[in-house]
Image (cartoon, rainbow, N blue to C red; front, side):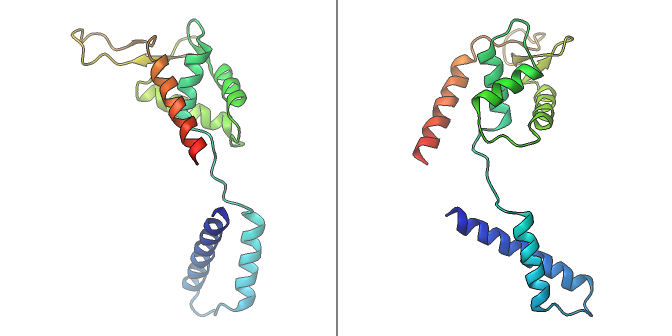
Length: 159
């Protein structure tokens, strides 16, 4: 199945490159040597199109903060180490991707970065009677993350 998918992706990529090459200079005709050259380089540069097996970064980050359960929140380094211990198949740019996702989660209000660079999960209480409350440190979200974790394990076992 993965082989068929990779073949389809490579064919689409090859066809796209050949199309762009042909339209960039219509006076030059594409011959079999051009096609062979492109196919060879595609195979050498893209050995496989691997889909990671780990869950989304937002889930891994939230789980790390809950499981680490550090007073005052968790540092980026602690979160990163937890994720490395718990999940395989992380990308080479893991630290950069983690940083990006931490910032994004702070922007959307799922996390807060404290003054000392620690990340804390928040729950928005906008629908409660106290409209002045912007959020509070999560204490009850453990079960929600654990339920999500169990669902992901079940899904991966079924696959």
